[in-house]
Image (cartoon, rainbow, N blue to C red):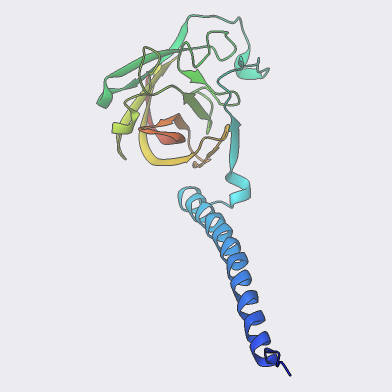
Length: 216
């Protein structure tokens, strides 16, 4: 009579336990990684802002293909002009570039540095002036040299007869997914610069600068 090899209940239980442990490991790994990312964002925001993540995370749409829509609020009162209304200057990289009214059709990343929809002009108390620009090659790569900046470097914004002086306090990168999280101190006026990361087309780099003084 032919004998059939049968696995003992102990072996079957052992194999089943190994499969469950391996599956559980991968599930647990994904869960831990997601929590690590959340914890990193929370700690980063708390360190720079001293506030809860929910209160300080702001998302700004960046769409380089669409025209900027008109923003109707108190700081946009008055006629729209296509002329420069102010200038961004970064001495370290010899950059001086004008910007236009954010309601203007010339406020376009394909033509100028772009004032992001939802940002404030420099004269708004505790506001955030957010500018985006191309990097890389070509005449419109206005932000191509931003990667040379380091913490404590200065930038100036000239607007309505005043010079706003900012100090660089934070640099970080994020994936290019059409949105960007701005981590800043909401108790001070800030200047945020956004561009593609140098030699990396999959991420964007965000530079956070805080106002240090205003000159007439």
